[in-house]
Image 1 (cartoon, rainbow, N blue to C red):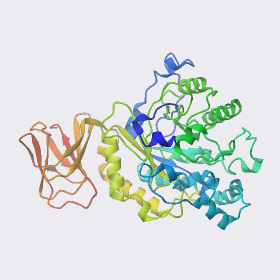
Image 2 (cartoon, helix red, strand yellow; image 1 turned 90 degrees about the vertical axis):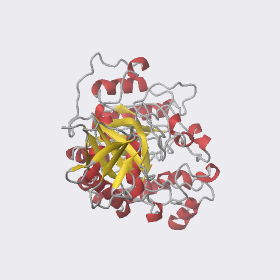
Image 3 (tube, rainbow, N blue to C red; image 1 turned 30 degrees about the horizontal axis):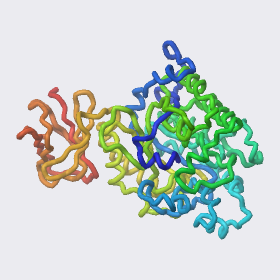
Image 4 (cartoon, rainbow, N blue to C red; image 1 turned 180 degrees about the horizontal axis):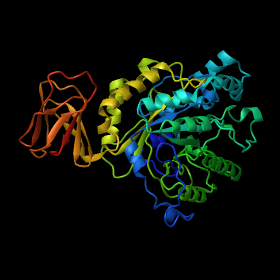
Length: 484
């Protein structure tokens, strides 16, 4: 979870880090022409590569010790909450350790009743390690590939300080058997994801690590205020990032909630870009660094929010399928995004130059809860028919449009081809899309249907006669192409 105040205002967020994999899974290790010296002027010359612009849809995974209790108050979606009571009633199950520290919180009451007052958060480690013995990384990767994801971002270490890989970097505040997972979850999933033709990226909580702090986060200002800026922690975080890059060659360095000010980011980024010039860094490294100017990022990361218009910079919305990122056993269908809303969310984001990083919260054993898998498969089925209008596209002249009967439309393009995505089922046999006037020779087709559709321009609008029977769908795509 990033700086909460900034997440509610996505345009304010920005900053850094990067990685690469090409083709299905082969890591490219060629050096960029001239290289990237370890200074910000050089690093700032790096741009988001085409593969990331093409990808559009990635899977986020929040999985860790918090997946054992899997409990949070389902108090609402981020951005629709009262910040005065947010942390005490935090719906993010992955924040269990912090909420447990808040006196009288519902999570603390639940924990004491279920596990007892003397059961420490890190005592979930044996249960987690026992559960992950059942995990099948190939099955997890197969689901993500089935639904059309192009890249995967795994939480290698969340704010609780527990790592999902067998790090050789010692945590001085944890016993040896409470520092990391018993299996190399990062390595095993990386191998499985790449084998399915997707790219692998890694999340790391750079600014917050509750194994190094005692006081809970109670208010939005505390998020910045509890970022750790000691030399000891900076060396610890630097060593972790270098270990992750060396061992797993992630395609994105996806940092969260800032970074220690003494950290050696210039050398880490320069080394990373020199080794993987098609890698990326996100915008969350500099949150909360006192006196530090914005320096560099490849994309920005609004959370549970999106842009209102087409942007000239690349962005990526991240959000859970429900109110939480980590698995929350309290959540059900009511708290999970409906199929229609999920499909419309992806379409809207892509039309405005964004990607969707959609989170799953596995159970402790790595299995995906059925309600989450159901939503993923619904999106995947829609992409099977309409993916041509999503993947490898770019924004058109404008993102939004309307039909004559008031229906919403979103536009994308691929070269000279324009895709008009109808966000609801047309009310008549012909649909009129306002303020779009392609050449008379253009051919209009409906993705998923056979044959050319009858179309004409009428007063600067496009009128298209639809097939007699439209299949049931949450959105329909008209492909408007130049004459063959």
